[in-house]
Length: 307
Ligand code: ARG
Image (tube, rainbow, N blue to C red; front, side, top):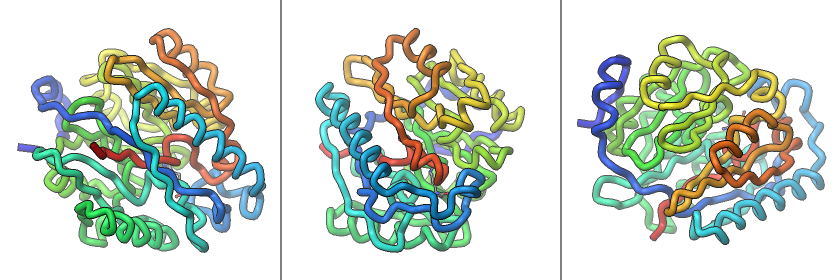
């Protein structure tokens, strides 16, 4: 019954009947001790090899952790777990990518382990595999030739057993069927067409079940149609803001009472206005050192679903 939704009309007719899914209860972070830019995996890294200021990166990570703590104080989440980064795994701080946690229909957690596009990042997956084994949490992995990069390309639709899946750069379209069956969720693929938006979380920011902010340049026309079929309000963020300040890599979470909190990279005035109009509490954090590597707030956490 869970499937991959390719046809826009079928999607529109079916979406509003899909079953409910709880929201994440916690966040996981990885410390930035070994964070660096050592090679070029995306356009943002091009000019930045060897350019990371480690002290500033650590300070910015601490501020991000403090922002996540605010979510905990507001009872939006209940847990924050922190894992130590590992030597030679310079991108491990972007822990949204190697894993994707979800709840099965019986409410047991399952972690989808990624098959990373870049060999250098596969070690992160191994580190997480061990971590979840120790926790006694079930993990699943696709056949290794099918690439999928976790929550970087799999973005949950709030409150529903459905994920939006970006494909074209890091994640393969062939992963969709497998993801749907493994996590028991509907999968709506979106085709990414610009190298600057190589992960779905760089160009698609879900605000709540009815509102999403996107950068239209990142998607093909059919994908835009799918987004418009499901969300009542599709807010456009200018290319410059999405590219230079990583607007759409913001993390928006909702409390059980429906209050929205948004953690935004600094410099995103359009998105800030959109969110303020939607009564969202906005927290800004400077992530300039991480943007040098092509990542920001949303990729520096993994969702968890502990009781
Ligand atoms: N340097 C990392 C890479 O290219 C950055 C990943 C950022 N993550 C994200 N979801 N955008 O793989």
